[in-house]
Image (cartoon, rainbow over all chains, first blue to last red; front, side, top):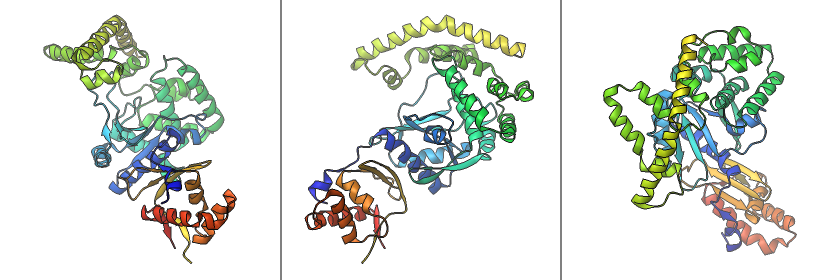
Amino acid sequence: MTAATAGRTSHALNLAEAIPLLHGLVDEVARALGVRVLFIKGPILTAQGLRSTHQSVDVDVLVDPERLSDLQQGLERLGWAVRVPSTSAQVLPLHSATYAHPVWPCEVDVHDRFPGFLAEPQATFEALWAHRTSATVAGREVPCLEPVAHFAIACLHVLRDLGSPGKRDELDRLVEVAKAMFDTDQRSRLGVLTARTDSLGTLRPVLEALGLPNLASTTTVGDLTDWRVRASSPGVRSVGWVAQLGRTPLRRWPATLVHALLLTEAEIRDAQPHAARGRWGLLRARLRRLGLGLRDVPRACMIIRRARRESVAGR
Amino acid sequence: MARWRHADDVALVSDVDRVAVLNLSRLDEPPVVLTGTAAAIWDAVDGARDDEAVASSVADLYGVPVDEIRHEVLTFLQHLASCRLLSRT
C-alpha cells in the first residue's frame, strides 16, 4: 500500500458505521457457536417503520437464555468485556450485560430477558423466537423480530420509563404507527404474544389503545408490583435498594446496607466520571451519592407502598 | 485476466467517499475504514473488473492519467487481498 492510500485507511469508526458492523460481528459469533439470537431495537426498529430515524449508541441483542454464557464467552474471546459489572440493587431483575471493546466506539447490550415480559425468560424467548424474521444490516441478513413482536419490545422499553420526559409522546407515536401498520390479524397475533409472554398487564395501555379490550382486561399471571415500582420511579436513585431491603431477611440487612452505602469503585466512578482520582476523590463521590440517595428514600418508600396497594387491589 | 471481487464474508457500511468493512472471518481484527481514494478503489471493484479496469475506473473518477495511479491502485488491491477483504476470480 502506498503512502497516499495508507493515509486514507484507518480503524476510526464513527457510530453510524460501528452500530451496523457490530450487528454483523455479534451475529457471526452467534452463528459460529450455534446460539440463537434476536437483534432488537436499533436500526432494525427504524427500518421496520416503528421509529423515526435515530442514531443508536449501542447494539441490543436478545440471546437464548440457555446459551447466554456461550455467547458471552465468544465475545470475551474477541476482547469484549463487561464494562462495569453491576452489583447495584435493581427493582427488576438485571436484564442485560453491557460489553465494550477498546477499538469499538459503541457497546453491545446482551439481554437474556426483557423487562415487562413477566413469563420465565426461556418461555419468553421461545415465544419471541416464533416471531423471528430477518433484516439486512451492513449487507448481512441478521435475525430479528417481525414488527408485531418488535412493537411489543419497543412499547415495553418506553413504558418502563414512562415518567421520564418525552416518553409519553414516544409511546403515543408508537401507538399511532401501530394503528396504521397492523391489521386485525396482526393485532390478534400481538394479543397471543402478550398472553404467552405474560405481558398483558405491562402492555395494558397499549392494548387498550389498539382496541383489544378483552385482552387488556385479562389479568396478568405474574406480579406487577415491581414493574409498577420501576415504571413510576424514573430518577429515584434509592428505589432499587429500598425494594431490595424489602426482599431481604432482617438478618442480612447489615451486609446489604453496607454494600448499598459503598458499592464498587467501578460503579461509583462510572456514575460520577468527573470524580477526582484517589481515595479522597472516591470518598467524596460516595458521600455525594449517599446524600442524593438518602434524599430519595422517602419518595422511594411512597412509590413502593403505592405499587403494593395497587397490586393488592388488583388494579 | 483475473477479476477482483469483494470477499463474501464481510459486513459493510458505505457512505459518500467512505467505506467501513469488517472481515467476518477474522473477527479478532478491527474493522477497516477506507476514505477518499481508498474508498474509490473499493467501489471500483465490482466482480467484473480486472487490474487495468479498476485502475482505469479510479483514474476516470479523479480525471488523471491511468499511468499515474496504476501502481498505487494495484498495490492497494493486493493489500486488501492480503487482508482477505478482496479476492480474485
